[in-house]
Figure 1 (cartoon, rainbow, N blue to C red):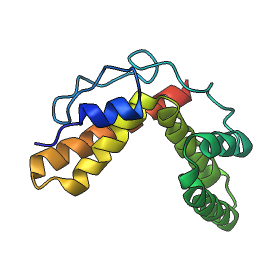
Figure 2 (figure 1 turned 90 degrees about the vertical axis):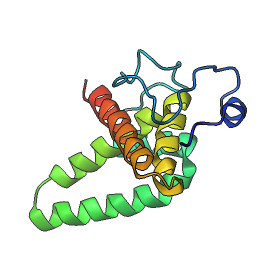
Figure 3 (figure 1 turned 180 degrees about the vertical axis):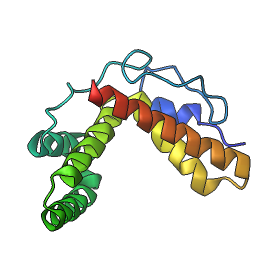
Figure 4 (figure 1 turned 90 degrees about the horizontal axis):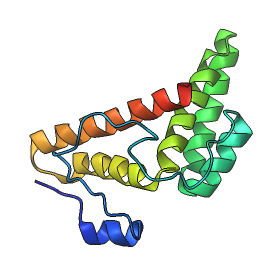
Length: 144
């Protein structure tokens, strides 16, 4: 079984002691209540607001953000509806929601990594479920 390494976590999020190994997570988290104070306020749910947040929180995602924005825009123009752009905004708002809570982001990224590094199918499936649960909680948080 693959667990979160306490030493790595400590370096990444100094002073925060809550670490739960993959495969032994608590029930569905809430985006705000169970986690640390966000490193920044929730941005406006606009292209500019989300882009500024991604630039600060996860600049390595800017190329993916730009690519997916172009794709959503092209689809919106093709079908003459704003739904693809609304979905794009919702997705990136959820990504920002996770990233602005360092401990939540750590758990999310670790859960995603387990899917690629574990030889145990059960552990990989649990990692996928954990990532999905955390993303679902982030979507719920930004919808309120």
